[in-house]
Image 1 (cartoon, one colour):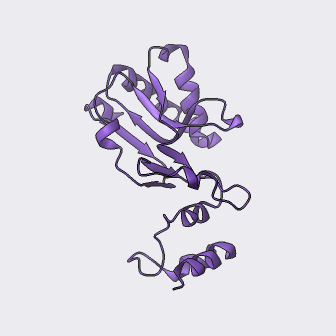
Image 2: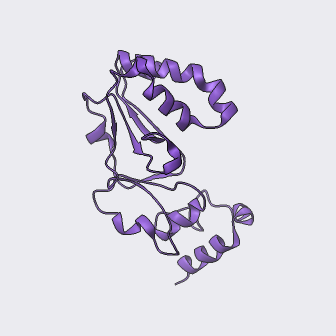
Length: 179
C-alpha cells in the first residue's frame, strides 16, 4: 500500500510467470481502470480475478483496497488463498466504485497441457505479454513452450536441484538439450 500511496502503479506477480514482452508501456499508463488482473476462468475460482498477475493504479480507491488486503493478510495465510481474499474484497459493496478489468486472455496466457498436447501453446503469439504456469507441472509447461531457461549453461544452474524434479521432466529436459 505504501507504493500506491507514493503514487506508483504497482505490478504484482507470482513466481511462475515468464514475460515474453514488457507490459509496462501499455498497462502502467494512467487509466480509468483501477485494477487489472489475469482472468480466472476456472469453475472453482468463483470470481474473475487471478492474482497471479495484477496491475494497480495509484488512487484513493485502490489505496483503500490495498489497506483492506493488508488487514486480510493473517486470514489469507491461514487459509492459504490470496485469490479468494482478493476477489472477496473486490466484490464487497464498499468497492463498487472500483473499476476492475480482466486483462485480455490472448495476451496474458495461462499455460495448460491437455492430453499430452500443448494446450495453450498454439495461442502464443508475438503480441503475448506473459505466460503463467498455473496448477501443477509448471516446469514441464515452460519446457513445452520453449520458456524454461534453468538448465546447464545457466549461471544459476545446479545439478542438485534436479534431484528433486520429477523424472519425466528431467528426461524431457535431456531430450531438449540433446543436439
